[in-house]
Image (cartoon, rainbow, N blue to C red; front, top):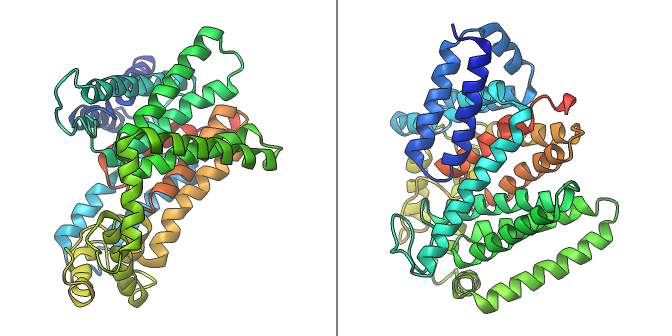
Length: 399
C-alpha cells in the first residue's frame, strides 16, 4: 500500500495537472483521470472511501442517476447505443465520487489557479489566431478562434472562468492593487474574447454570470441589483453588437431563424425547436420511464419521418432535459435535477464565500445552458462540471 502522505501529495499534483489539462486536451485530461481512478482503486482504505461517498447525498444522487441509465437498458431496443450512453455517464458513477474523496479544500486555490492558467493560455492563442499572428489550427479559424475545442464548449467554459476571476475582484478584499489590476485586465480580455468567438450559449451564460455576481454582491439590495444588471448587460450587449461582426452575425441569425422557423427549419435554432417538438411527441407517450437508455435515435427517427421528413435525424436533441426525459422519463428527470438541488442546498450551508457563491453559480449556469445543448455529454464541459463539483460541495459544514 502507499504511504498516506505520499498518496495525498500525489493526488493533489494530479488534480492540479487535471485542472490545467481539462480545457486544453482530451487525451491529456483522460490520462490524468485514469491515473487518479486507478490510484484510488488500488490504494486500499476502502471502508473510509465508502463512508465518504455514502455520507454525501450529492454523491448518492450522482450514482443513482448513473444506475438509472443502466436500468434503462432493460426496456431499450438499441442496446449498442444504450451502452454508448452509459459509457458517457460513467463520470457520475466513478469520477465524481472518486474526485470527491481525494480533493483537498486547502488546495482549492491551486486547482482554480491551474484552471485559469489554462484558460489564459487558450485565450492568448485565440487572440493570436484571430489577429493572424499564427495560422489557424485544430478547431480554430480566424473568424472563430477557438483552438482546442469547438465554440459550443469553449464559450461556456470561458464564461465560468470569467465568473471565477470577477468573483475575486468583487469579494476578495485582501487583493493588492497590482492583483486587482491583473484580474481586471484578465476579465476584460476574456470578455472581449467571448464576443469574437461564436458560442451563443456561452454568451448567454456570460450575461448570466454578470447577473449572478451582481445579485450576490448586492445581496440585500435586490432592486439596485436589477437596475445595475439591466444597465451593465445592455451596455455590453450593444457594444459587442456594434463592434464584433461575429456577435452581430450570431445574434441576427437567431432573430432570422425564429422569424422564419416555419419556412426554414433547417437552421441551428430551427433544428433545436424541431428536435424539442418531435421529442415531446415521444415523451408524451412514454412519460414515466421513457423509451430506454438507447432508444432516442430510433424513436426520434420514427417521429421525424412522420412530422419533418425534410430534416435530418438526430442522436441528441441538443437539450439535456429533453434527452433525459425521452430516455428515462419523469423518473430520470427528477433524479437528474436532484443532483443540482443538493449542490445548491449544500452551498447555502457553507460559510466560505467563494465556496458558497461559486457552488450556487455552477449548477445555475449549467441548468441554463443545458436548454440549448446536452452539455453533460460533451467531454470538456462535463469534465469541468464534474471537477468543480468534486470540491465545491465537500466538507461544507467545515468551510
